[in-house]
Length: 121
Figure 1 (tube, one colour):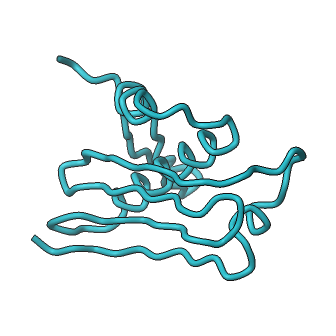
Figure 2 (cartoon, rainbow, N blue to C red):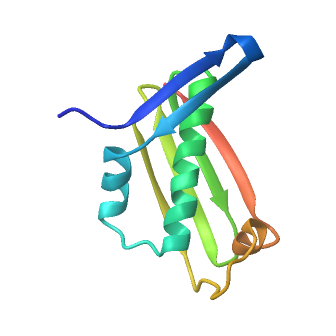
């Protein structure tokens, strides 16, 4: 089956600008099919998927890279793992979410941590 996921590097030579564009379709649909994520959690998890893929695309590694955000707030865990081949999986854990929009830091609590781990194969 052909995937509609895409990660593309680009270079604009006239401006000396480099970047990447990431589009997830099949992977995102599969990642969210088994869990009924609230819209806030689903949005943050999607941003974490893209951040992990873009970071993995800028570094060279042979194995797996894991991006994890842990806290004691309404959202307790966001974790995304990317393999050297570009396959990706992730999940989120949350508690009672605020009724009103809240800042990223407030959602995870004061002692939140972001951890990036690279496991060599």
